[in-house]
Length: 609
Image (tube, rainbow, N blue to C red; front, side, top):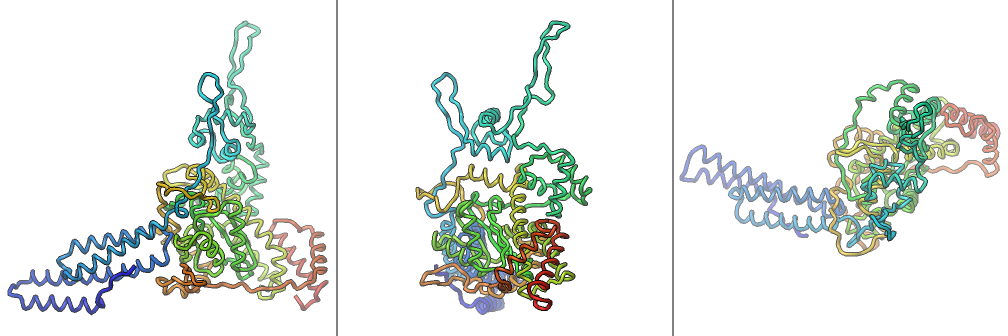
């Protein structure tokens, strides 16, 4: 799109101002009111010219870098419409020739933005996402209404997330029918009868005795934990994840297969840990965020909280549900490592319509896959600054609190008093050999708890990410770019946002956490995005929306300092220790000290490690 340009604005505005002042002095009319009116017109024209120039710059940048981010494009369009309304309102303050140039150019911007918004529809061109059949009618030929059968697999998963009343609308039947089908399929155990009748021996009359808890049903997964056992389980959870609150504890219990009422969890928490400060009154205020459904957009990023110890955590999260689709701690920050995690996640959860990431060089292979497979024009991969990737920045804060900070403090203590030298490659190899798999165990276990913990929703009941992921697919269709079928353009409502929660950009906690744990990456990103408005580049003769400059955060590499035989000797020694396999951080410290001593004394000698 060609956007008309004006005469250099500062010179043009000054010229017009001088003309107005000269006209005011030479006019036959006089009076202070008339002079103020003329000066007011000149100031308004300068303001309009400046706003027009700034809008043109923003629109040019948006058309190059924000295809796929429908919310941001809509915002630019709204600003353009507002400006053209203001220009029309103050038309007499704008010379007629300039009025035509400005209005025509803004209309060109609006047309181009509307085309970009159309490109940013959910899914590929002419893609209709298949609906999921949750139930169906069976005509038996007998009198009465047909029998409604429910998909057993969906019902089993649904009952893990909601009760029968919450499933009635999903399966298009009553809660009673959901109950009956659950019993038919053996998913729940029948409850005690509502009442029993018997003949009284003394009076000879028929007596009806009501059961105090009759008429209900018991889920096959209902917990049988006593209070003592529940206390032990929660104490174990808090030992591994000491920063967990009640909701995350509930999510972890569900992951372990225990369905425990909140009141019991709260009472157990107080017995084990005591009343936490602010637990009752703490509220997390969440802003509105909408995309079309699960798999409409994934966010991904890498966190460098442990990079001093040559560990980087990468994660993918679904924007609609906050469901963590992939997470892994690695000893490098390479693009192939990030791509491997992405392909593993999409093999399980389907390929998302779009992916949003920052300007890190480690994202290049994911971006190339999305753009090569589904086209760059539609914004298959949305490049943006990391501070704009708010959805996963919020997740990093929870990951740090959940298990990241625990490991950082542990490694720092080894460095301070345990003999760890993180600048020595052999020390880093031993650290990873002992604990990298344990960090990943915590990461996967944390993700399971996160996906099952409930969160407050604006104008909705509390729901877990797993609940929103599962029922979002039933309600909005199953999105998978590998399975999309080309049909007529669907008339479904387009999503209102693609990845930037602009209202959250001023969240001080998120920004503070981001800069504290990704400081070097943020500085490099800022240096490489000073000319963000001109980021269209070419690769292999084809255009792409990739930034011209990518920021690279490299993790120093190291090699195993031992032979295979020596590694086997070390492993045999470690497995004989009582601390082997323990998740206690004190036992892990003892394991490190034993391993370091063994390597120094037995394998290398005193001065080599």
